[in-house]
Length: 225
Ligand code: DX5
Ligand code: ZN
Figure 1 (cartoon, rainbow, N blue to C red):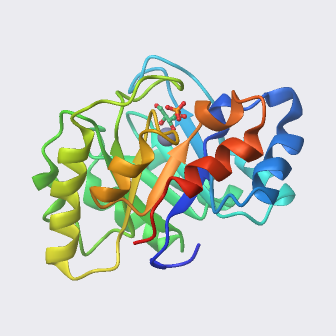
Figure 2 (cartoon, helix red, strand yellow):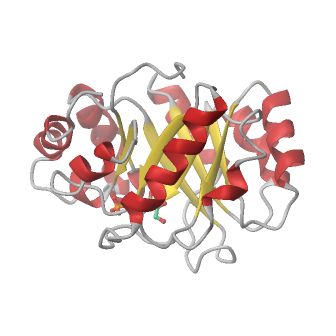
C-alpha cells in the first residue's frame, strides 16, 4: 500500500458486490481504476451484522494485486490481527470504540508489517485521535453508522472530517483520511472539500448497472487536491 500520494484514492467495498461473481466484480473495478479494495469484517457484536473472515482475504490476495484495505468492525480486534495479516491484508483498521486496548492492537498490527488504521463512528469525538497520530497510517471516518451497506450519507460528516483533517495536519504526519458510508458522485465533492483523500464506496459502485462507470463518476466528482 503506497504512502499518502496527493490524489484521491477510491476503495470499492465488496460488501455490496455479487459474491457469486466476486472475481469478475473485482476485475471490473480494478480495470475501472480502483486504487484499493475495501473489505468489511463484521462480528455480529460490534455491529449487528456478519460478513467475512480471513479466508476471503486470503483468496483475494491470490486473485488481485490491489491493496487490501481491511476494516475490522469487531469488538475484539486483537485476536484477529495475526490471521488477517497472514491472509494478506495491507492495512488493518480498528475502531477506537472497540473493547481491546487501541495502542496495543495498533502496535501488534505494525509488528506484523501491516499498515495501521483507526476508525471513528459518527458520534465519536475526533480528539481521541490526538494521542494516536504517531501510531497510524490512516484514519477512517464513518459517514454512516457502521454495519450495513447502502445507507444514506450523514449530513454531519463533513464537519467531523474537517476536524480530523486539522488534527492530521497539526501532527505533521503523512496519514490517509478515508471516509466510508453513503459515498457516491453527489456526496463525494463535500467529503473531499472537507479534507478526505480516500473514499470507500460500496452500494454506489456494485449496485449500479455499470459499476465501472459509477466508479469513474465518483473519481470525476473528485476535484484534485
Ligand atoms: C458500513 C461499511 C461500509 C459499507 C459502505 O458499515 O463499513 O464499508 O460497505 O457501503 P456504502 O458505500 O454502500 O455506504
Ligand atoms: Zn467499511
